[in-house]
Image (cartoon, rainbow, N blue to C red):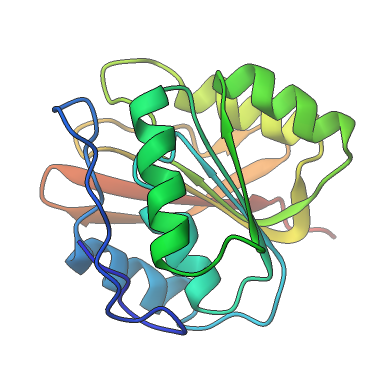
Length: 186
């Protein structure tokens, strides 16, 4: 697993030991970022259920300004911190080892808004819809922001969740990604 493009292109990322983390394959990452926009001009990225931090670090390498990477596993957080150092992004990244709900509440208290939010929770836990609902109700997504929700391809997510609408679904074998943004205005 590596950073595909940008300032940290080619940096090999450390994997999390054990089998509780399912990293997003490089081919999926490349395809996803070609759709999201190959490069960014600033903004904040949130990688929730970050695992190795691969998606958040890729976004930062491609031009996002600041990132917050969160996972509740201590092993994952150690790996994320190591990967942040490997990418030389310590000044751009905050890493939190917390439950997703607690972390989101703290981010909402800080009144942060994210331009890009990656959600890749364990497939066997029903966390996506409640997490997206909380993000919407807490106004954590910037007006033009995008939520990238990774899930099993056999699972269908709702088209509308609170103020957000799914506008695209991408399938990669057993993995699917659903993209959400704020409802169209007017």
